[in-house]
Length: 385
Length: 160
Image (tube, rainbow over all chains, first blue to last red; front, side, top):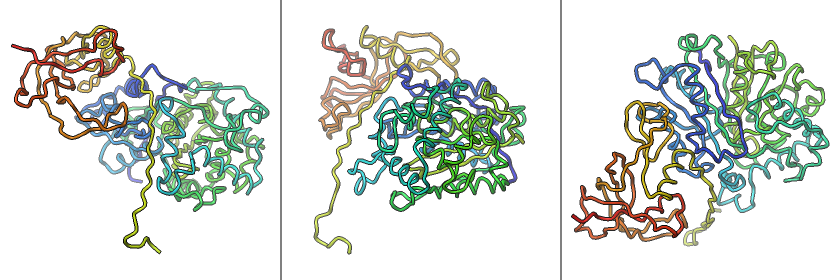
């Protein structure tokens, strides 16, 4: 790659179940203001500041056609370039990286924002399915996830206890993350006793409703080195879509993630992710997904996700800690979820992760996903140098 | 086999309900509360370019700076800058049903320096013109102000 791109600043709001006190622009600005202050950058046209903005939000979730309209004023978009990526926040980071690699811009602000509390998740997610063919069945991402969880557990013998261990680990990790919405000391029994939502997924297997925002600044190499003494370099990036109809995939596998990961690893020159990745932040909307995504990312063999959580490798202090921030299960909104994963990877690389800081982090992976059953996957590999 | 010619096309009627609870936030919230409780328009002045943001907002879009607490009363009178007589029916966002727009839509520059969109009482095309003077008519007290723009009934022509 001729040019290199780094994340030079990250900020998040504290994630919260209902930020009824702010509108979307005010929420987004809580994060934006921090990255402006940290870098001292301004929205100017003379090449010394932020050149463009990429945002991430969803029209349907926000109930507003062109959902980025309302944050334009706080995101420096007045008579300036701003584009929205209506997928996961990792895709917004990916797009901003491409803007810089293309030579079009040098410094880009990326911001994702979401207030899930303002509407009804099931209605929004049901509308993601084909209105002519699927929608009347009543599918949403939760019921689709239940189908995937059952299929995955059936095919590979994954147990409810192994899924519950993900919840226990991540909610515990969140206790050291001041941005986490719902840190909690739980036992496997607590998870298994929580009310069933759509079998085999129980209430504690699912992420809570969440509001929040995340912002970061990406810059090309020469400017990144001037803007930060600890730039986090984007070493690899990959993105891949899977089939739309659930029946066209084997839901026990995640082929699109394997392909996205391969792209990212090839670009980053990673031959063995099990040895070369120091930590990973993955987007587990549901507990089983962390196990399945580990397989897709090549952290274990196919069907071995359950054994990997049993082994303790993915705990804090293990060889490959997963979701040191507490992940999505500890409360993070749709769209913001994967971008917060990038933020955590950056904080860990910079040695700024506070009480949850891991030792000797030189390569971190951030993963984002959107669509039912992990349809669209994005993998970013970040490194210290 | 594809559908036969002459057969009725299949369509899927799915009437979508969209329940939302949008937070007004501190700045829009104050603007709307002032309209509802005190029948007055307040904006906020940008500390840098001194332009007035109305409805009030946290950040000046031109200067990209956070505003302070320089709240400004804008008066209830203004001048019509633009108007349109809507002859077709439109969807009422509060019901999702069609309604006939009984009043012209207009852009009004308030005497205090800010601009807003609302509706005019005057429907007679012969009496509508850019530059006409108007004033806001608020929902009478006791008729259940909601804290939204329906708390302003319309702008009526100021008789010379």
